[in-house]
Image (cartoon, one colour):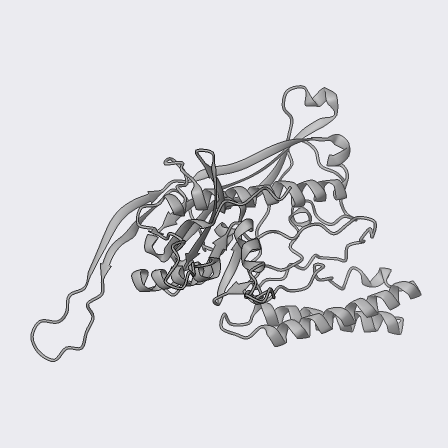
Length: 399
């Protein structure tokens, strides 16, 4: 065996070990050093692979050495950069033989600590641009759980925590109101016509599935989880009784000052903690609110740069178009501060893609590509959410 092939095998084993270290790390572990070790191992593997390919000895090694999905690892708590629903559904580019009517594949979102490892290296066409990573919206940040049917659960209402020290007499009595509720299952789906040419080309399918179908499905799920009004399906958090409202303080104080969006987020976090008892973990906001936050300036005109690593007040920022809403001709740019334990996003049918024929597609060399999943939303602690419908005033169209 050529020495360069031996080095490639060794680098591949080291890379697998780095991946396994991240996958098996306990939930409370500091992933930073493990991620650094992964990046170093990945760089060494790619160096060895390039040397072997230049020498013409890599072909024999390909069936032994797995390649990590392009992009490496997100920071702790996020999805892997390289998650590719197209590859999971249709296999690797080099092994792809096209799809026909009747094809169906389930797409399983990897765990936030997992790294997806293809069974063999992919041959990457450098002329094809990199596609968008799988987005994380509001629904993705909630507690995730499987289900076999509609979910019946208890929703907490008014709570009075009277816990106190006790020596003699009657012990303190707390009061918690619980109401039985049901979270019905509903399909979230969309479809698009595609040509036979697109169905036989891996890169075309990659563009359609990853950049359009799966992103569109994820956005629709978050819209449903945020502002859904389907009583027979998903009623969004903002339309659930018991969610705490917040109105941005636009009345000037004695010094002529009003709250900006940064102030509002902090005040909303306080409401969540005081009323629900849960420490807030996230803040979801419309893109326009995020823009306003990023562009805040001090009195001398310098940018405040108050978000660090996509966090504000130590809350994870989730940018979601579902919080830009229109009501009676008025556009609202909302924000919601929440503890993600407050609701559970249930899944029965995992997201999947399916190819079929409708109408006269058979004689027109065309198919229909369908993407769908079946979900339910249970808002168990409504007061763990604080919603401000107008986090910023209505803004002009940037176009």
